[in-house]
Every structure is written in C-alpha cells, then in structure tokens.
Image (tube, rainbow, N blue to C red; front, side):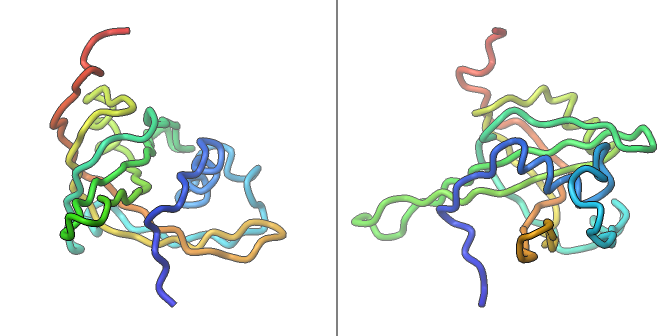
Length: 161
C-alpha cells in the first residue's frame, strides 16, 4: 500500500529532530534509539546522480541546525508545497515535505538565512527512510535531500526582528 503524505500533520520539532537523528548520525543519536540498526547512507555526489526534484514552497518552521560528530553541519526543515486544484469546485491542497542537507549544502542553506514562512525553491532527491522506535512499528518516512535552494520571496519575513 502506498502512503499518502498529504494532510498529515507536521511532526513537532522534537519528533522531526529524532527522525533526522536516525538518518545520519546527528549528535544525540544514541538517545533516540540505541537498538536501531544503522541506516545506509549515500554520499552527496551519489545524491546528485539520482533523479532531481524541484519543489517550491514555504518553510513551516525555522530550520534546525546541528553539528555532526565529524564537525560538519546538518540542517533540517519542513516545506509546505501549495498544489492548486484542477477542479475549481475543490479546495487547493498542501503537501508537507521533510527536507535536510549536510555539510557544504547545509552551509549554503545557512547562508540564505531562511526563516519560517519564506518561499523557497529547492532542488534535491527523494529518499525514504525506515524509522524504528522502541515499542512502535517501523514506519517509512519520506525526505528530500536538498543540494540547492534559492529564496523566491521573503515577504514580510525580510525585515529584521
């Protein structure tokens, strides 16, 4: 059965951080699920060779930055993609994406000074991770590994607060 991720509530920051922790050795990984098997990862170059996807949407929350064990940077954020309905009698749709980047890609994203609500276009590859938590059945969680991002519109978020 194929999962439909539309209309699913966005994970809170803590749950999102725990999911990301299980994907590639974030600091604090051992606190999340010490019995989880290591998840195979791919290099950034392998990601670029896969099929590219482009998604435009608004950040659902401020990005979460973490330092990897080797000192590299990692960023995660949620992105709300607006899908216009083809049928004018039906409401538009929103699809939520979990997005992350590592190392030089995360550093580039950090340089964009992204904030909640900013409209961005990201380029990356789709991934699905199996997340195993103690006492819960394993579940598949879709991610986009982002290796390119550009700000489309900061709107009211362009002012310093």
